[in-house]
Image (cartoon, rainbow, N blue to C red; front, side, top):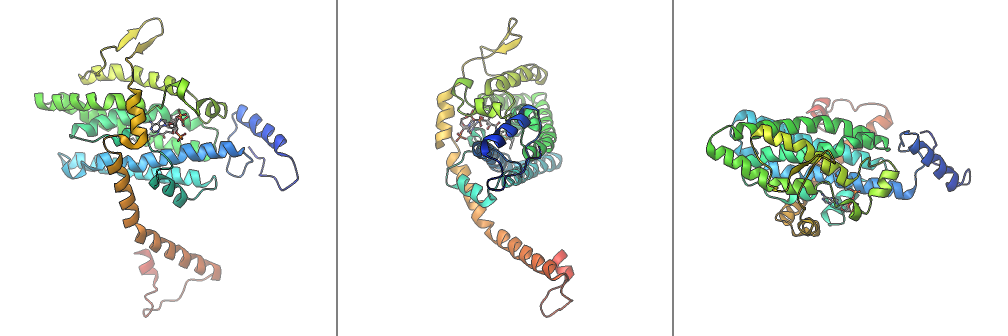
Length: 341
Ligand code: FAQ
C-alpha cells in the first residue's frame, strides 16, 4: 500500500480509512508510513509487544536447564534455542517500534504489569524432560498460531514472523527428538517424558487464548487481517496435529475425552480449566512472580550495556556528521582497533 500519512487538510480521515480498508481487503500490506486507524496501530502494538515480551520471558524456563543439560550436544542445542528466542524478541520489538513506540516504553509496560506475556511461561521446568515438552508442545503451539501471522496485514510483523517460524520449526523438532530419546530410553526416562507431557499439555492449549466467545479482540483483529483464524480454530488444529505425534512418541496425552469425531473430522477434547488460565493472567500462576522479578533484575543489571551502546552510537553519529574518523590518538585511546574490539 502506498497511501502516505496525510499532510493536514489534504484528505479527510474517512477517505483514508476507506483506502486502508480496501488495501486490507485486497491483501495488500500496510507499511509503517501508510495511513492507518489509531485503533489498528494500538492493537498491533498490543499484540506485537506482548508477543515480544513472551519471547524474552520465555527464555527463562529453559535457560534454567542450560547448566544441567545431559551432554555437550544437548547443551549446544539448548543454548542456540534460547538465543534464538532473544533474537525473536529483538525482531518483534523492532516491528513494534515501526508503529511509533519505543522499546523502553514497551519494556516499562511489561515491568509494571501493564502488558501481558504468554501464560505458558508461568509454569516451572521441573525436569530435563520439560525442555523436550516445551519444544514439542509450546513451540508446536507457537508455530500453529504464528504461521498464519506470516500473512498478517502489517508488513513488518508479517516479515518478522517468516524468520521466527523457521526457527520455531527447528525448536519444535529438537523438542520432539529429545522426548523420543527419553521415551525410548529407560523406564525412568520414559516416565519422566510422560510426566512432562502431562504437565505441559493443558497449559499449551491455553496459549491459543480464551474461547472464541470470550475473545475480546478476535473479531476486529480478523477483520483487519492481523489474525487469520480464531483462537478455537487454531487450538483444534494443534490438537489434531499432536494426537498422532504423541502416538509416534509412544506417549499419551492426559485427556480421557480425546476421541476422533468422525462427523467433524477433528479430535474432540475435554474441557479446559479456564479458571486456571484467568488466575495465571491475574499474576497468580506458579512462577509469575519469579519470572517478572528475574526480568526486572536482568533489565536493571543491563543498564550499563544500554548506556555504553548509546554513548557509542552518539560518538559514531558525531563522527559521521563531521564526515571523518578521528585520527589515531593513543592518549585518548580513540583508535579504530578499540572500536572494533
Ligand atoms: N497468555 O481477545 P484475545 C512462544 C490475553 S510465543 C496471556 O483472544 P488476541 C515462542 C490477550 O493478550 C507465545 N495472555 O486476544 C516461544 C488479551 O489481553 P489484552 C506468544 C493471553 O490478541 C516458545 C486478552 O487475553 N505468542 O511461545 C493469552 O486476539 C518457547 C484477550 O484475549 C504470541 O503472542 C495467553 N495465552 O489473541 C518462546 C503470538 N491469550 O491484550 C520461548 C501472537 C490471550 O487485552 C519458548 N499473539 N491473552 O490485555 C496472538 O496470536 C494473539 O495475541 C493471541 C491472543 C492468540 C495470543
